[in-house]
Image (tube, rainbow, N blue to C red; front, side, top):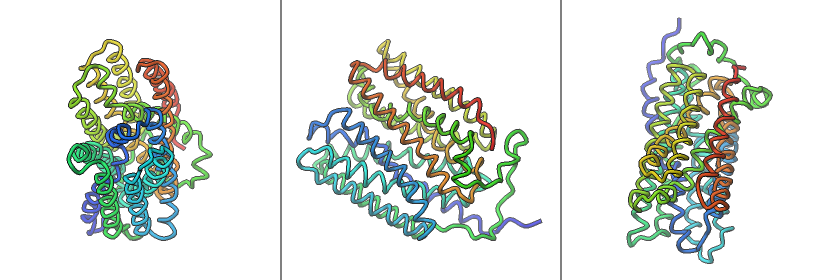
Amino acid sequence: MKEVSKNLSVRWAYMIIGVIAMLFAGVLYAWSILKSPLAFEFGFGASELALNFTLAMTFFCIGGLLGAQISKRLGHRIALISAGILSAWGFVLTSLLRDGSVIILYITYGVLAGLGIGIAYNVVIATVSAWFPDKKGLCSGCLMMGFGASALVLGNAADAMFKSSMGWRKTYIIIGVSLMIVLALAGLILKKPCADTIFPSVRMKKSEDKNNARDLTSKQMLCRPSFWMAFLCISFLAAVGSSVISFAKDLALSVDAPESLAVSLVGVLSVCNGIGRILTGAVFDIIGRRKTMLCANILTIGAAAVTLMAVNVNSLVLCIVGVCLTGMSYGACPTITAAFTSSFYGMKHFPNNMAIMTFTVMIGSFVATASNKVLEATGGYTGAFIMLLALTAVALLLNLFIRKP
């Protein structure tokens, strides 16, 4: 019997570096805060700004596919350095907006920043996850926690800089340059495990995991009903979080929250997002895929229902509870996506498979745009949350029929 490699302690250092890289990359999710000065200075409407977030998520997903290919052909270092440069240009060019053209915003923030951060997201997850085949859920959860916590850490820092003499333009430049430096350093430091590295044995769950070692290509994965059911299920669950993220501050204000509390609530959502990510990862390793996905689904239904009740009875307390539950449920989605993909389809083709599964974020962001359209058309949040609640019910039905390949 082969002994576990003695140099595995380095993987925890790589985990920390990965979390830091994801923390900076996750600034893309602080859009509900980052959009404020743009709306004020240029008069962009809610639907225009929501579409920018949708575009950013779309190119984020495309960046994931691109990152997998760059990493495969040129290595993860080149991929992460390229991601840093693209992200930096996205934020720096956004800071140069002058005429208020929303199309320019779509190109700089939506396309360039979204693409760069998407590349970084995929490459960091694939590189660090390769060191944790025995702790798939925990690894995914920690990395996703860093990504989700960004809205609290960097989002609130950005908000403070917006209100200082620095202004929003310099703030955007600082964010872009910081992203480039952190991602480039991560690329230079992170390494992949050698082919002969021996990891601790994985405890297989008799009920569902005995065939999980099988490696499937992306083409084989796409031919499996399990993929499409999981893809739609996670997309619909993510749609609730994406929608609330896009209007979290305004949602709080609609139930008479003070301005300062409304801004803080965006940060609270981010904290719950991070907690949801790491808890889901730990739970995944303990109770398995099926039960974890069902729990996440039920949590999302509860989050949408509580928030719907909050806007109907104008309750700030219920709104806070709903936002917290939404953050935790949304945090479960990316962790499940990464852990599900590696567990069902193996690690050999994980970067490509993960990039495809990440398109759930794009579907969720399109639903977020639709939610904002419903909000504008009806003048209230009730219609939007009824739509989201219906999607979570469909997700539960799909969830019940997912079977291992």
